[in-house]
Amino acid sequence: MIEIVSDLHTHTTHSHGKGNVEDNVKAAIDKGLEAVAISDHGFSHLCYRVKDIDRYLDDIHNAKEKYADKIKVLSSVELNLVSLDGDLDMPEGYWDKFDLTMFGYHKLSGYKDYKNFMYFMLPGSKTKKAVARNTAAYIAAIEKNRPSMISHLGYGLPVDKVRVCEAAKQYGTAIEINAKHPDFTVEQLRACAGTGVSFVIGSDAHSVSRVADFGPAIDIAQRAGITAGQIINAKHQTQEGET
Ligand SMILES: [Zn+2]
Ligand SMILES: [Zn+2]
Image (cartoon, rainbow, N blue to C red; front, side, top):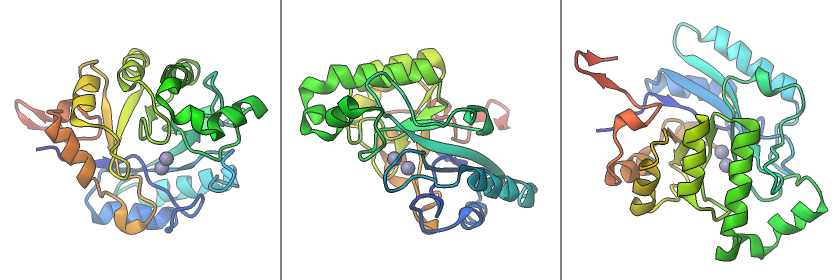
């Protein structure tokens, strides 16, 4: 049985979630989690970006202090892939201000230039033929930026998931199994696990009621034979008992 002890992917009103930072933290406490990350959308997205990054970090910091005796609150962000060269949309000087970082592909991001805008917005980037190029972009993003994790791998942009997992394993980046977009077949997930990469299970909650809602992600992980030991935010057992 896989039991998840922290939700490392939740959104708030700072991007397009429905609850504020404290609402998500309180929901996570109610669900008995040990930690919750606030991970709103990165900074170039045309509709959903965090607009005031300093106020965002202040809100998370305040919740961190206020609820320190009840839960660990982590500052995170879901950055956007904005070029085929693996660029992400973190503003300069902010990488060190976050406890965790992740990235994914989201359409309508602020692509680096016109060429990338045309590539990612046109249907060609979503075809089988584009897989090699998309995969190279993901791998470049890992190598250049060393993010903590990748959100909903394969959602919105087809990639060779196993090759991305090989690179992620090499650089210590975890791969999310996302409960909102569990875009893996059992076979794919098994093949990804075969690379030795670590996984994270995230709710991708955009409403307070979905914080800690991991059902579909746990289901596919279990069907693929993934064990708690391969999932960073699962409860781990030792020979002596719980850790
Ligand atoms: Zn996302
Ligand atoms: Zn998300």
